[in-house]
Length: 201
View (cartoon, rainbow, N blue to C red):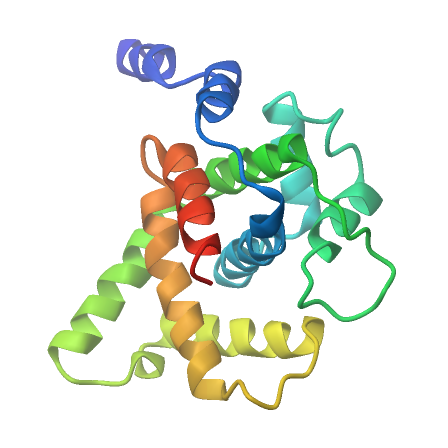
């Protein structure tokens, strides 16, 4: 019991994590489209690996006191639909800095909840690489790659220039990223990565 209380007392509170993000650089207007795309893709990787859906994301918003920014399923859909790569015109193309911070905190909170599964998947990926085997030969990775590729193709605008191999490569890269975002300070890592990558995306 003491151990549980100690770890809980020493884990950062949602408020302190929010304050952390407010102290980091904010994106400029040119970077926003890339940031919206990257945030949605990180969530897509988390969804397809763990099987979570919008209910888990909305529960995370409540747990983190972010329900005023992500109040319901429609609001969440609109935030994710702001990704310029997505099909359909129903979403809002604007995503403000507070909404982006909210999605970062929700993503890292959920990644932390599923850290054991993420670790197992990354461990399998390393094993496959060491033995020169294709990642999809491991059942967990194969299921994840299939789910990611199918969902990507279902939700994103058709792009004849992107191959299945490239989508697979993206899926595996995002899987490794999720491991970093699931650990201590993951929210800072994700925010800084979003800004850094948006300048060269």
